[in-house]
Image 1 (cartoon, chains in turn cyan, purple, green, yellow):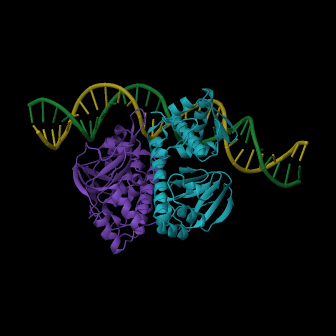
Image 2 (spheres, rainbow over the protein chains, first blue to last red; image 1 turned 180 degrees about the vertical axis):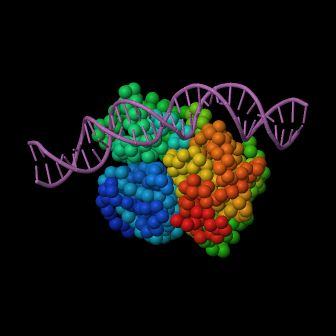
Image 3 (cartoon, chains in turn blue, orange, red, cyan; image 1 turned 30 degrees about the vertical axis):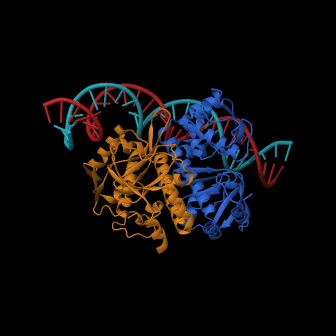
Amino acid sequence: MVSKLQRRSVLVQAECAALLSLPYRLADLDRTSFIAREGDRVTHCAVLLSGFAYCHKMTGDGARQIVSIHVRGDLLDLQSYAAGLAAYNVQPLSSVQAAFIPRTALLEVAKAFPGIARALWEDAGANASILAEWLLNVGRRAARSRICHLLCELAVRQEQAGICSGPDYDWPMTQEQLGDATGLTSVHVNRTMQGLRKDGLLETIGRRVRVLDWVRVKDEGDFAAGYLGLTALPERRALGTEA
Amino acid sequence: MVSKLQRRSVLVQAECAALLSLPYRLADLDRTSFIAREGDRVTHCAVLLSGFAYCHKMTGDGARQIVSIHVRGDLLDLQSYAAGLAAYNVQPLSSVQAAFIPRTALLEVAKAFPGIARALWEDAGANASILAEWLLNVGRRAARSRICHLLCELAVRQEQAGICSGPDYDWPMTQEQLGDATGLTSVHVNRTMQGLRKDGLLETIGRRVRVLDWVRVKDEGDFAAGYLGLTALPERRALGTEA
DNA sequence: CGGGGGTTTGAGTGAGCTCAACTATCGTGG
DNA sequence: CCACGATAGTTGAGCTCACTCAAACCCCCG
């Protein structure tokens, strides 16, 4: 289970074994807890086993920006492991289960197995690519477009993580958090979501969302899955595969 | 020269030697050329020897977002090397000189020397941290604040790269590019810059800028240098060192 | 001395914000 | 089983920051 997070890269048997034999500690956490705080010294690496988590930063006057969202299997705050200082706050979005691996053990294994180091680097690169796309999203797209984009991203990432299968999937965020992720106000998010529902693009049921018209959502969100760094995955819905 | 880019991490002698013995090809490039195009297969890694470069992405309807800016010594588009696909466009901001290292050679050396792999990972992490700060900047700060923030960031990064020393330093961007970096219009950037000049915070001379009141610029930009991932550097101006 | 890229200015507009109240939902304990 | 409180979602009115469009200006350079 700790190993399947490495689906992006090819790992030889011995490397998988090394990853699987890493010591870890399991923990169940709820929404109020912190997995890391910006500026903290990082002693453990967290792997999300179930649920959702997010990373965020704050400005001096208290505005929050969500910087990434993570699904089952993701390594949390990967960027910080090499440097040893948390670059941002990490918190669960829902109740989660996570495995904590001592940072030194991970570094050891990375030192011993170049393939693992490579895979970690690659994963960090994919994260950076997503971050860049978010920056584009927040910097240059209209509100409705930003939301549609994120809708698509979470759909394919959940699908790829093997969580969802139909047109409806988990939507772990409140509207306020969605605003913090897209650089909008919760009020404006609310109005925009209403617009999306009224136009028949989607409907929401509690903490889930069902997309009724993928083509339009993907279109309005200007979404193309390339930046996610998923190489050749079977995409059932073929979301964002054509030009 | 190729090696001093590794000031962030500790490298042993042999590792430095390995880096220095990497094959490379020098090239002089001007503003119109592309170092990489989004989606390209990456065959070479570029190290900036002089001048400035930037990475950008575009939305479907042609809006551009600048995603990072690089100074002398930076590895360009580092995130992409592991995956092999360029995550965004890379272009010079000014006339630049760059060294191109075959990607396979770099990967080989990373495989052979764990310390190098670690350093690359660390550098990628620092880049990601900057990206996250930019996302916060664009998503949650007002126009004036965004610009002040970027002003500060480029000041300390240039200082740390050993380029500038006084209160004035290179400002390689047009106002349009500054807008693309901050998620603003060039018109609005212009008016905001005028405001900053009128308030006595800075003055511009051609492609350079002179900051007249660091305290206020740093303050208005909500700037704290921590996210840059510079460990214990002598900061002459002590920009962003206090709480 | 004529381009041409970059900067500046003006006038009008609108997307998204603020503030403030109200409603729906859901879990909890009495 | 209901009352309660807390969290999340919804609505309204008014405002403003930043955008759009368009024209002029200013250098720098050939």
